[in-house]
Amino acid sequence: MVLGLLVLWLVTGSMAQKPVTISSLRLIGEKEIENGFSFKGTTVGGLSSIDYDSRRGVYYMICDDRSAINPARFYTTKIFFTAKGIDSVVMVSVDSLLQPDGTVYPNAKQNPAHTPDPEAMRYDPLRNRLIWSSEGERILRGTDTVLHNPSINIISLHGRYRDSFLLPANLRMQATEKGPRQNGVLEGMSFDRNYQTLYVNAEEPLFEDGPRAGLTDNHPWIRIYRFDVRTRKNTAQYAYQLDPVAYPTTPANAFMVNGVPDILAIGGNKMIVMERSFSTGRLPCTIKLYLTDLGKAGDIRNNPSLRQTPPTKPLTKKLLLNLDSLGRYVDNVEGMTLGPRLPNRHPTLVLVADNNFNAFEKTQIFVFEIIP
Image 1 (cartoon, one colour):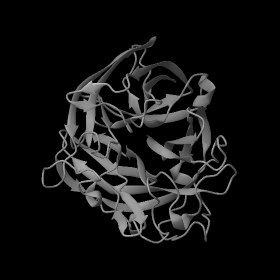
Image 2 (image 1 turned 180 degrees about the vertical axis):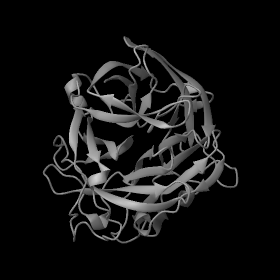
Image 3 (image 1 turned 45 degrees about the vertical axis):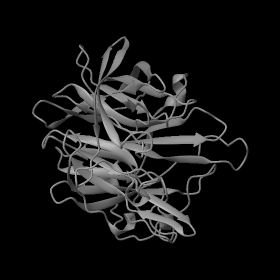
Image 4 (image 1 turned 60 degrees about the vertical axis):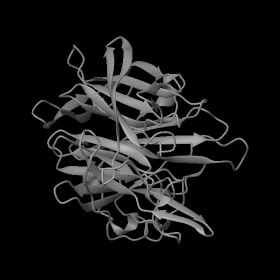
């Protein structure tokens, strides 16, 4: 159970975001999508985000396949559950993410400078469109150099390109140790203020902001970016400090990471931040949900280096739930959304795990009842 009092926002038929009070979370159930499951000629997996469309009763889930298995794409699904558990997950459709010229994105062998790395997607009911982010690419191997900037893209419900957001300079890929790290950029996304504000976050610290998370507290700062949806411009940045990596690796000095795979604005300047920790040698991930208050944080747009000048008003954080406490296997959870209300009128929170198209990992759906 998660104790405390929160105010969350739900999408209603009027497309306004209205507050809901939370005192705890109750796990309703978990459902696994079979590894290697095929749908309309595509391999289902790599599900890195989830967002609920209350008008259609469906969920949009982006796939982080970089056009390597099938063209970059997203799935529309239905998840059937009651207060007693999850019945089924049904694939409704799959749509390719399209480039401005209407073609599918190339893979890394065809054109690495234009290969996307899809990570986040949200539905905008006010404008009936989707917004998704790509992490871009940063490869420095002698003559094999690829610098592909991350992006925030506006598309139709069937994947057709409409427009893009204007990114600040510190999100541009660079050949020097400045700007975003590879595979650690625009990972989470959330609308707020009746779809007039969009938040996105860097998964890991920018080079100039400090080191990646380690096993001890080394002050790894990430940035959460606020955008005006109308102008598509960045209007504020906030500093958020990551936890240390949850477990040591086996063998020692192998790959480990702790970062933020998703965020969920919940009204009143509050936001749920998801941290995901992985250590080589341990299959489960440690997933923590934190509450933070944007209203009490300082704007760091004019601070070029959090390493040199630590933030004076960073985002505070309060632990809401460590999924380790559920006493069950939890894989690479990367997405979260508010789902439909139960018959008792309690809203739900739905999470999805990305299996990385790995036979040893699982595509999981978790559903929680939000207790007022």
